[in-house]
Every structure is written in structure tokens, then in C-alpha cells.
Length: 346
View 1 (cartoon, rainbow, N blue to C red):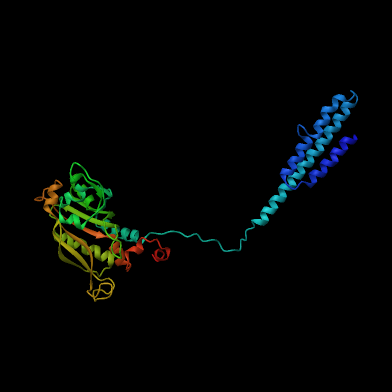
View 2: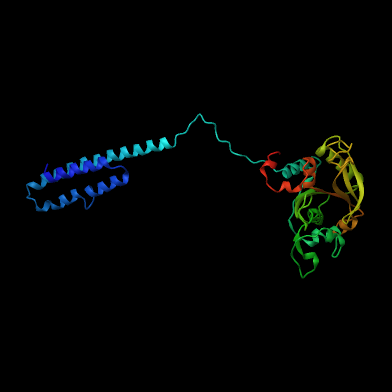
């Protein structure tokens, strides 16, 4: 082997052995075997050799190239193995360590109460129906016997989206009660009706322990032939026993709602003290839970139902209220603050 080739081979083998990473190794390869590399330059200079010398030098160059390519491949494998070994040292997993626990979410107290409540009414043959949260004044007020300028509108002050030039009926607002769903179902004229309508409602209330501008209601409606106040009382008795406990009793107190006549507030015996009187029921033995009544004949008429042939009852339950009572929570705001320490109790 010629002296220049021998020198190139020895220098290249030294550089290959000293390369500490794949980038340096690639630089050595290009410097020796690349288009402008040292071996390539020797091949280009063969035109200056005699015809007898060219085959000999060409063979020697190819032998050196093969030796260096083999050395490069071997060193590349060594660097790859060293890199993997180092990575494994850094990323060693101790299989004896306890596994990491991932926090899993669960149902919100409101959702638990809603599902329990729906289960009770579905068991009594009710259908769950939902409707839009953004509603027309016609369904939210007028068809529920609350015409324009009615005092009940002040009691249910809400958030208006648009005021319609066609009149108050077409004003668009955030619904104040899920009774608007009942009006929509009655307008469809498919009788008999037996539904509950859960959902979020909105009123312009200040936030405190018992009020919020956004809360949830579950309203019920039954319309058919021969429906009486006794049916309403029996339905609410059954609901109270299944939701609050089998020994729970109900009491109806006269009240007034524009869309029902007669109307009543409903109390249940305190599930904490059994009616004896405690801090939960403020010593009375009774807790108010909802409002109800027989559907007003005028409401039936406006929805296209003959009040001489059909009658019905309706009731409205504040979901947060029954959740607060059932789980003995003293501040409604706790349900919406997303404090994990509070929510983990359910």
C-alpha cells in the first residue's frame, strides 16, 4: 500500500475511534469518503498515473474504503449502544415503587339529586322532556297566565336577549322556569300528558346562601281526563317517601301561582328529626320543598285544550333546594365553587 493511502487509513481509523457522537462520526465519513473526501481526491488523481499503476492503486483505494466503511459501521453501532445504555440508566423504572393514582371525577351533588329525582318519576310513568334555555316570552309568561305588565313578571325578573317590535309575546329571554317546556308540550295537543321537565333557569337575583342568577328546576305536568287534586297529593306523597325516606309525610298549604288554581306550597316532615323539631327545620318539624296546583283552566284554553273535558296538575321543584336539604348543605354557593374538598364528600 502506498504511503499516502497508509497515512489516510491510519488517520481516519484514529478519528473514527475518537468520535464521541454520531455527528462527529458523520463529519469523519464525509472528510474521507465524501465527494470531496481524501480517498475521492486520490481516485481523481489516477489520471496522472501510468496504465500499469492505475489498477493497483484503484484496488488499494477500494480496500481502504471497505476497511473504513466497516470501521464506521462498527463505531456507529458502538455509539448507538452507548446512547441506549445511558438512556436506560436515566430512565430506570423501579417496579417495586407503588403505582401513581390518577384522580377520577364523579357525579356532582346536583346531578346525583337529579338522577334520584328522575328515577322516582320515571318509575311512576313520567317522561323526561327538555326544552330551550333561550325562550320566547309567549311560552315563558303569556301561555302560563302571566300577560304583559303582570306583577308576577317583576317577581321573576330575568335577562332579555331582544325586544321584538311584534310585541312582548315575541321578546326573547333567558327562561325563568322550565314551565315553558310544559307550555310547548301542551301546545302540541298530544294528550294525555305526563312529563317532568328538568333544566337550568335564570333570574336576576343577587348571589347569597339561597339565591343565584342561574339555578335548576324540575317541573312536572299531568293533563288528562278526570285528573284531580287527590292525584296530585298522592303523587307528591309517593315522591317524598321515595326521595327523602319511607316515613316522610307531606302537607299542602294554600298559596297563589298565576298558572295554577287552586295552588299550594308543599312541606315534608323533617327527614333529620322526623318531625320533632331541629335546627334543619328550624324547630317546626316541617320543611318547604316545592309549589304545585291544578293547571288553571285559562292556561289549558290558551294551549288549545278544552278545560271542560280535560284537567291537570303541575308542580315545580328547585333542584338545588332539595339537594341542599337532602345532603344538609347550608350554602348554595358551595355547589358552584368547585372546591374539591367539598365535592369529594359525595
